[in-house]
Image (tube, rainbow, N blue to C red; front, side, top):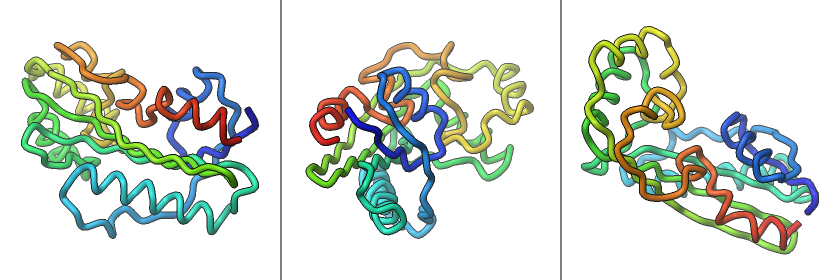
Length: 187
C-alpha cells in the first residue's frame, strides 16, 4: 500500500487510519457545506463528501490517491443534527438525542488514478436519558463545539449508550473496514 491523502482535518479520521496501519498525509480542502440545501441525511453527506473530492482533485490532482469523507447525525425523526451554533443550540441538539436513537451516517469517496470507491454507511446508537447535571457540565466544558450532534460517541455520550448497530469507525467518521480492500487494491 502506498501513501494516500486524507482530505480532512479530522483527528478522529487520522486516528482511524493510524489504527488500521494506513500510511497517509493529511491536507484539508476548501469546500463550503453551507451551500447544501437538502434535509435528507444520506443526500447531505454524499453531496458534501463528493464536493470535497471534486475540490481535492482540482487542488491536489491524483498523484496521491485521495480520501474524502463527511459525517452527519440524524435524529430518530430523520432531522439532521448539525454542529451547534452556541450553547443553547447544543443543549437543544443533545436533548433530542437523550433517551432516543440516532444514526451516524458517513459517506466516503476514495479515488486513485485506477479506482474510484464510494460508500455510505450508518451506525445506530440507542441512548438512555442523559443526566441533567452531567449534560450541564458537558455544555460548560465546551467539548461539544465543532462536533456534529454536539458530542462524540467515544466521549460524553459513551456512558449513555444502550446498544449499537454498525461499525464504530463509521460513527467516528470513516468506515475503514469497507474502505480497506479498495485502498490496498487502488494505491
